[in-house]
Image (cartoon, rainbow, N blue to C red; front, side, top):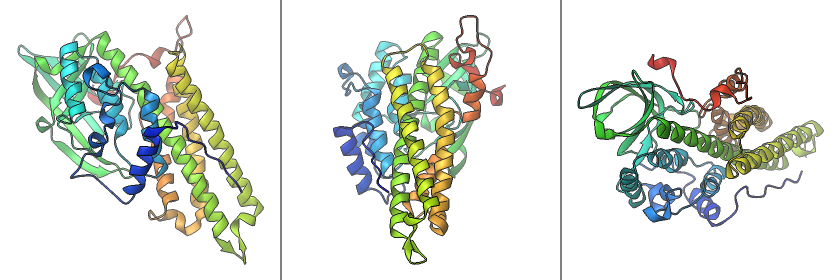
Length: 375
């Protein structure tokens, strides 16, 4: 039962991330260290003139792939993609100051957004005051695996309904609840009630803020998909090795035709998922007009593939498939959870099925809207 898994995004970044993940495979958290800053990953997308690496989303995908292949979780998507892309929407002077702070490690900036919702589903309302703004709304299920010094809070301005992005000191917001997600992420719920912030806290508003949120959403979907496909490869590899090594009735499980067929089905699904991912990255790099439709379709398809492969792997591992000590089990959990990152397949399917405008563009794939929880 041979399988072949060539790297998705080969190169030095992938090698470094893979070695790091192997060395820290047993780590459950990094409370006393900040590997994202220490490895220089936080400045991957920051332009070189701001002391960054000037890298691309494919470079960041190499890091995501290396970590996912070995089952290690770090909030790379949130800290290295979403936060820098939102910061770049600010005025040049403010953007330069905060992006340089991110690269130096003096600031750890994270989005105060729900892992399970698209970034353009804005759950916070901002009321303009004489000397600033008051923020009200819920951010449920925010990744807090990496301690943040500041949070980026997307909000809708009352009255004008403009999109805005605020930078808030982490000390100003306190969690209402804390818990661990299925794949082991540390998350917290935040409830903002008339949180007063100065006018300078508003980094961007209007078209600039809206475009930044959409670019960040595109990046989050692409990197989450890269994580999914990399985890699929490891899951299949672990399952095939288990079938070769485990024996029943005096023969290896890999000799049973039904199990061979099921493993082959997983591999074919993986090849399809890999092709979808690479096509989506190509459309992103070429700024294709139908990118957001492609991302929504990819999200729906990958969610079905990930769930089917996760369930098959758990079943073929038998009793071992429900033990978190087994890497394949942790990969299955990762795949099941990935469906709900930045909008589940039903949310994206709903957008795909939304009425189209006369020019054929999907109405809801490019317009941020207010979450029901904040109304």
